[in-house]
Length: 158
Image (cartoon, rainbow, N blue to C red; front, side, top):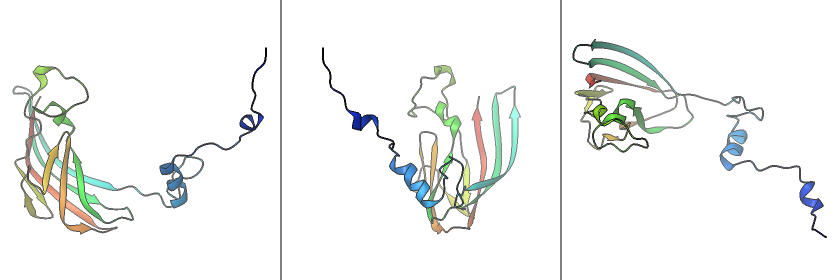
């Protein structure tokens, strides 16, 4: 009986590092120990919400203000708002099956202002897809800047 051996392969000590991970190390946003690096950043949002829950009708209604802070080194042309409850919105794509009794209108947004300018949900400036609402900014958001959004009447049925 005989076999082949490859001592060179057995002695290899390097390992593959994916391009995105290597770029994070090079940029200083991630350390080799896995912890955030010296140039790590994270965008933040402050929320002020007024919510009314009606258990009898199984409805939630409200309005609110969100202030989004661009703490990245990049200028942003758009912002994505997560509408997680839209997983139950009629005709929305979803990766998992949901109970047909739970399917409804999703989150209903009656009015949306971005830095005081009204946006029509469903338009090019405020386009919905799945559980995301993509907001195109009228003016790019530079690093260190913030934008304010206000919404009236976001509501949903449970």
